[in-house]
Picture (spheres, rainbow, N blue to C red):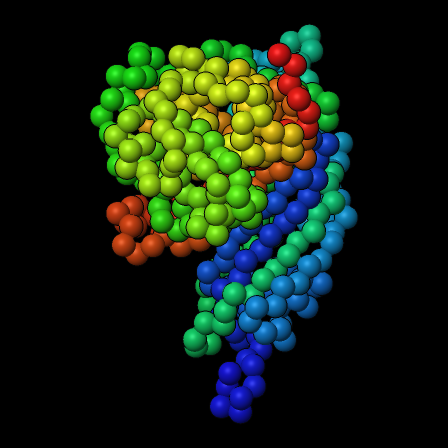
Length: 415
């Protein structure tokens, strides 16, 4: 409130904290991309937004939520056949990365810089190019933005007006470009299933006995506290009160918010000491899913199964997803969250090779391969600030991104 008791409104000189969200749909799932903007300089950055979105910011009060729908090709450059290029196989620079070799796989994304001899493409170009065809020693790549053919709705929420006025200097920020950087890479190219599963994708650096690796308890969080708050908030939205929950690949904290009020939480993990320290659990089981994907529960035992920052360690994910479908009740939810941090010795090789948004697509493929889930959704949340007391604050001021994929069991699984 100002001195006259009026609610302050955003002006052309305001600095604000805001959150942008883009929702869109593919054939396989619904998608939501969230980008937090801790300091939006209205004077400098607003003109880069479409005019309907500008109208949802200037003159609006804190807490305002505005939504604008855009047809395909309005948020990013429209799709054009000119951006589909065909090269000879030898023009694909397999050694573009200094530390490893790349082989072209259908449906996968690669930096445009790997394409040699293409007009307008330079070796330093990191924009994504998707391999869509391989025929008679040639490769076709789609250079269009991955969401160019999709309509979307963009929501802007005004979180707060920051003290002081902005200055007229500094680099302009294209907020929509930042929001759209990555989304679309999680979906198939039409009916083409992405080739994730060539080249021993489930190998890891330390393929030995997982029980030995996890014998020493690790009482540490894998994400910063703000990212974990986002995970808890998501679970709070997805879980019904009174649910019976399986916390898959559990540890010393299940990240289930109090308001979810579950009737029972069963933790299945690799270390007894970690499970014993988890006060949210009613039952604790040590079980190695990579050694034995079969879950030690009867059919239709749970209303929800959660897997937090662990899906990247599964070496037999297809069997695990089928087992999760078996132990879920009809319409039960399976929700997985992850980020861009992991234990290097045990993460599968494929996970490390993928773009962060392609990892969403990989988990979607697990769901699709299982065939027993419906109403699939993906979520990305980026741009929040890392807590000042976080030990990694010197490396990055940004909170760990949060990615999530979930779906609902659609039918009984045949035994």
